[in-house]
Image (cartoon, rainbow, N blue to C red; front, side):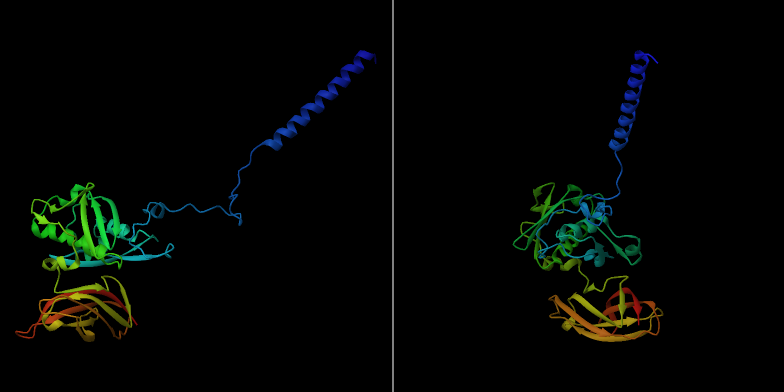
Length: 308
């Protein structure tokens, strides 16, 4: 083999080694897909926040919590029952903007179950919430102009009351001011309802039932006892509460006395036990006894699931 052949062979060997090395380096540089999050010590993927939770607004001043409260949270949503105010309970994600979340639930309107319990709403479909702020226990709620569309005086008064009661369920709120499309409202709708000062729960007597049961609400479960809370304006502040089974038989009965009555609305909070032989759909029935003939008047029925 001459010198030229040896040189060619050496060059061929060197070239082969270089190509092999480049291939190995290329394999090492190839990116890989990891299922773990670099910031997650457990090595498991970091959960993505649900859109329902992440879409909730920042703190609106309605929560006294210093940290985010645990899940789940429950709020009252005030709808209509016939031509009077009614109540439902909704579960919401944890939030410090609880007043904002409650109004959003109100604007959704009653769901299928709530409608089956006789609940409705006078809030116009398409009404949007622009914001809720709370200062010195006065909430200012900003809604789109759709809120004042359609309806007469009773409808307008009711929709205002629905918002006022939904917001004033929280201890940090005592009264409510209204804005529409960012502008404060002093006269509401073509009905000329004056809103020159904040509305309170005492502003709404005309659309309230004689006995407003705020707890329990339709569809809830009662086990062994029921706590009845709300407000009433009845003769001598006295009314009757009964737990009835699916067939209407009375399982328990209690006379309840509100803090005031006979023209002045008072609050009540009473607990009484009941015994049911089986799990069944029953009801809480509250009524006033007529001073004229002793018959039940101002009757309100709240469907409940009764458990032993």
